[in-house]
Length: 312
Ligand code: UD2
Image 1 (cartoon, rainbow, N blue to C red):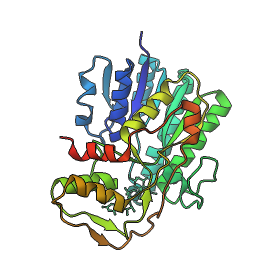
Image 2 (image 1 turned 180 degrees about the vertical axis):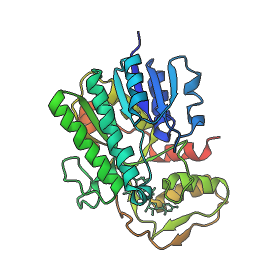
Image 3 (image 1 turned 90 degrees about the horizontal axis):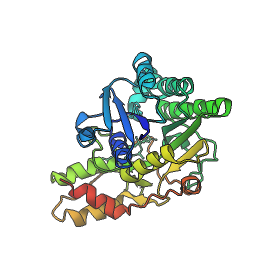
Image 4 (image 1 turned 30 degrees about the horizontal axis):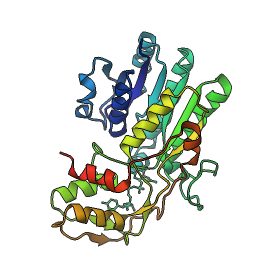
C-alpha cells in the first residue's frame, strides 16, 4: 500500500503545490493547516483526491498531532507551517518562537516517538543575513538579521541535533525567493513577484524600491515542490541544510522588462526610496542539493513568470 506523509502548512502557497506533487506520485497525504495564512481554496485540486486527508489544526497542537501520528504511522513529515512574515516576527517575537521554532521541535519529537524516520523542514535563505560572499553556500556561518531568520536557524540546529543524537533524517531546505501561482499579494511585504503580477494584471503601476538593480535568486514554486517531494521520498539522503535556488541572479529591472513584454500597455513603474534593511543581492549556490538529490531548479525564469502572469 502507498505510504502516508504528513504535510504541515498544506493550505499555504508552497504547501499546496507540494501536496499536489506527492499525490501525483501516488503517495497518501495528510494535510494540516490552521488557515492562519493558508487558504483552503489552495487545496481545491488536492481535496478531489481519495488519497488526501484534510485536517484543520495547528501543527503545534500536540494533542491533535499525536492523534494523527498514532492513526497514520507517517513515512515522513514535510513541515512547512510557519509564521511567514519577517516584519511580523519583529512585532511578535513570542509568536515567532512558537510557530517557527517550538512547533518544529515538537514535530521532530513526535517523529522520534512514532519512528517516523524523515523530516523535511522549510528553512529560508534569510538565515544567511548579511554574509558577504555570494553565492551563499551552506558552509558559511549564518548571520540572521530578524527573529524570523533566527528561529529558522535555531530549528535547523535542533533538527540536526536530533539527527546526530537519534538518527532522525532531517533535511533543512533553505528556500530562496519562491514565486508562482497562489502566492498571496496581500501585504506590501509579500513576495515582489506576487505584488507585481497582481498590479500588472489590474493595470496599476508597480513601485520599485531603490534603483531596481537589486537582484534575487527567484525559484519557481513548482521546482520547490519537487525539491520537497524528492527530499521526502529519496531512498538515500544525508541530513543537513541545503539551498533550494537556481544559482542565477535576476534584477528587478530585468523582471520589469519581462512584464513589459507581457503587458505592453502597462503604466510605467514608479521608483521610490530603497527599503530600510533591504538586501542588495541574494544568490544561492545550488551545488549541494544537486549532489545529494540530483535536483536542479529547471523552470526558466521567463517561462515561470509568463505562466504566473498569464494564468487564469
Ligand atoms: C524577504 C524575506 C524573505 C521572504 C521574501 C518574500 C528577508 C531577509 N527576507 O526577502 O524571507 O519572506 O521577502 O518572498 O527579509 N520590492 C519592490 N517593490 C515591491 C515589493 C518589493 O521593489 O512592491 C523589492 C524589495 O525592496 C526587494 C525586492 O523587491 O529589494 C525583493 O523583495 P521581496 O520582499 O520579494 O523579497 P526579499 O528578498 O526582500
